[in-house]
Length: 151
Image (cartoon, rainbow, N blue to C red):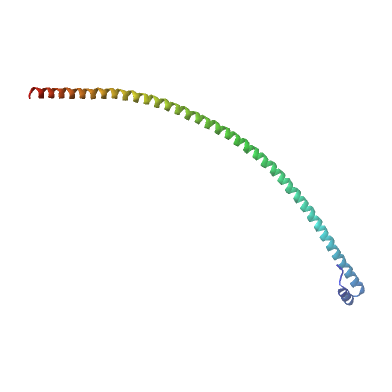
């Protein structure tokens, strides 16, 4: 940034030719150094940004690898757990099926015993009914015979 002409004139008036020229020269070098410093700072920031980008990429890559490893471990554990659970479910299912088969046999046996008992009671009830009917007929016949004898 060039030094303003008004400032240069004022420096010449106050300090004189030689001192003003030295002061202007020094201010131009400072201004130039500031621009150089700004460029250097921009380059340094660009390098830092690039390195940061590399570090972030490296970290993401490491995280991706770790996530993949954890995912594989989790899949393996879930697979083992799934197999174990399937085994237990099958064992339980077999146990339930066996118990159902036992209950069916017990039910068939119980129904057969019930049918036998019902048949016995049916025969017994039929005998009792016949006995009551015969007793009723005998007593009716006796009553009729007695009525016929005593007119």
